[in-house]
Length: 398
Ligand SMILES: *Cc1c(COP(=O)(O)O)cnc(C)c1O
Image (spheres, helix red, strand yellow):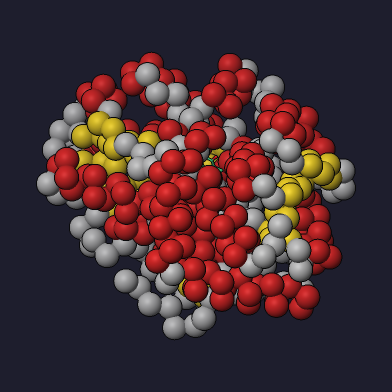
């Protein structure tokens, strides 16, 4: 395993760039997490919820018709789309809800852009009887009205954020403000491997179940490991979740796929690692999309889950040391992969992992019939049907 000598850092990346008033809460969270990780009773409880509530282990699926279509390389899908609520996000939300209760906190807050993370948090709040407030920009509430309804039915209060761009960035600022005010009663569930330490490490540990399961399943089906593991990267939690189990397997290539939107050169994209440079956003030092003055740039992707200007600090490190290869795939290719997977496999992928599926096709053609590729299918695509049927209408508002 790669060792990181500086506490809370991945090489130079990560850290805790937060107001002084939150340092105590971050310290408490880190302490409780380390204690819980070593507590057999906690692990047993977490395993129970993973099994009966989330539906784990999720299957490893041989995508034989996609394989044939792309020239014969073996393509397997790790089926996170079969998790309860339709994506890997619940793996994190369940774990953090248990930690909140361990800290005696009875209120959960979250920020959400597309609403998927908000739904995951509202779901665990309902399951464990906790209060819940989800911050969401006015513009996102309009675009994602179905998820707003889901959250409300689950009992969450959806707090409309009408300031700034009325989207995720401003919703995050409001959530942080709430946390500063109510830190003694409230736990803030961040939805990816981003934010200040210990979130990137803790969320990785909660998502690594994806790769731990997949590695074992792959070995038991195939007797050896895949040549390549491919996953999409928004904040980077499903990718880190599947990569972590393979980091020490030097013969396994790891490929992270960002959103190239309309194309890197158009400036309308969300590829922080491919097209950005390091800076501080939401409490951590990592690659991000910024202008010459360090102002965070607006992003674009057809998939809301990848439409974020930053990325988790561990990915920045893995990019610099070249353990993971990061590439970017655009809207058009992702749409085509969405349609292909739906028609050939009877599995409608979310638009986020459709980016990874396109790249898997490119790699399959390079490797030929002997190739072996594992793809993280991070979520299901019902939520994306409007975007797929009329791609321009659902485009991000300015
Ligand atoms: C939110 C989301 C993502 C992006 O988040 P990561 O933290 O990068 O995993 C990817 N896929 C799906 C289905 C999502 O809902």
